[in-house]
Length: 238
Image 1 (cartoon, rainbow, N blue to C red):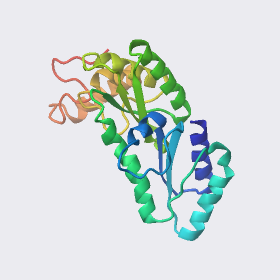
Image 2 (cartoon, rainbow, N blue to C red; image 1 turned 45 degrees about the vertical axis):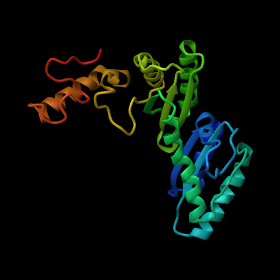
Image 3 (cartoon, one colour; image 1 turned 90 degrees about the vertical axis):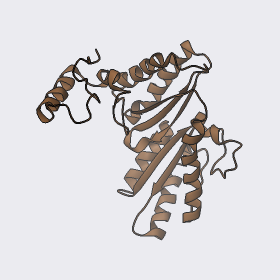
């Protein structure tokens, strides 16, 4: 993870404004691609994988600058592959985009879309894995996401064939995210599912302000009633 952050910092510094994607995949998530009829950019076995894409206005010069950037931090790169054409780039993205669909085959699983400051992410994941392992020794934690904006997707597979302990998994995951100053939602909103946990990463004052704005702008409760904030006889989470 430290190497991935060093790579992110180097690209932003040496190729300012050109970074268009910085996807990170942890080893367990990358391993779901093993055995598929799919051309992988790199073999399995490394701790963390990064898919970095840069785009500028001078293709040839920008490619040289990107390669120079990689050469400057090769001490943190165990392996690398560079796309030299649109077709090769498509192969890289095909591998990255196949990961979620393969993970979804591992049912039952519990999926999370959270945001954690990149500098604190590895500690957060280590703590999360340790707490989950205390209850489910065979647990799998499959992680991938958009490290450039602190957003990660987490799939938890407990090894049980039931979803009855869903609340226990959510408590651990969201608790670890809260202790790392993160957010329980990054891309997909709060809705009904995450409403009970909104207080994990929003203070009572923030919740009160949200309620005040909702009452002011939508006094009849006709806009997305019951999403994010409770309505009527429903109660807010503690």
